Image (cartoon, rainbow, N blue to C red; front, side, top):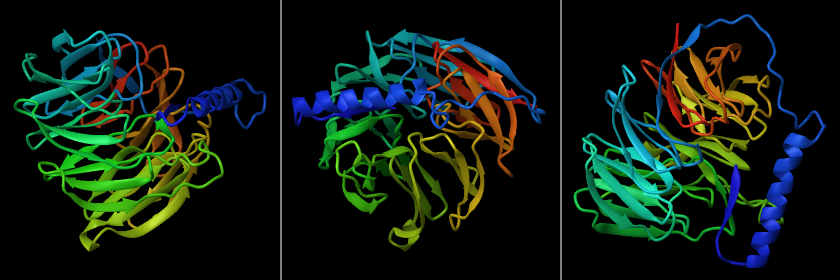
Length: 385
């Protein structure tokens, strides 16, 4: 997790960055056991996990880089500027290209268009054969992966503006901006397009449903409200991606709440829990799974928010966003391990080391296994037997 800032005050920036650095250092250098990463303990494994394939996709890892699966292909990008298309079933690299010197976010894709964002604010698209289609500039740097669908490419830039471009030619279709806070998290955030509607979380604790082609706001709901005396205490960004399950639309925020709204009833909140997560949620259709800011994992009943189980054996291990695959909910950690947790009761069922460096990108569950973008520039498919 990192903090990004608007241009309100240079003095505020210096103070905030100093505080953030002190906070990060104290969490992992203090001898206080409350902040130390939980050790990896021995237990009887209940799953047999193995690396089915591994593909080099570039160098580095970072927030804003989430693999995109479309049918039997996966698109992945790295901060070093590479974009690759890989066959999901075999791990074969179908094509790879150097988009720019550095990328700030990626990937968004559908069956026709693939989009990434360069660090100079450019939005760059390719067809599925790896041919560049167009480049255009967003209003500022893009740190959230583009979302592609229904003929549009949508980005959210660091000035809290959402912009939609025509997927055919890059023409700007609409632009929408909401007032933003002084500070916001730099973490993994994802927008989604469902049935022509864009769903986006915002740094002010709100979620929006926007008509993808017109930019008309159809609904806006409050996940959480800012609390506290300082700008750091008042950060309450909606993080991860929205979870849609039947009539329910769920969102989670940092220093805020998990809330599920019934969009069939005008967006009425069905249930909510005070909760702070920096990585977001996953669902199996019956439960929501999330790790709080201390990396304690909880399962919530999707229908009523009942806490079904909790697991604190991975406390302070800087867990990634979760994925569901088979009977497990799966997380990556800061040492390159992935951990398999029972969806039923939260027991730790297995772990596997997949590469050096922290796993920052959210995991992606598939019927073939779980996709892991590692800290050393590889995309790995891990299967479970």
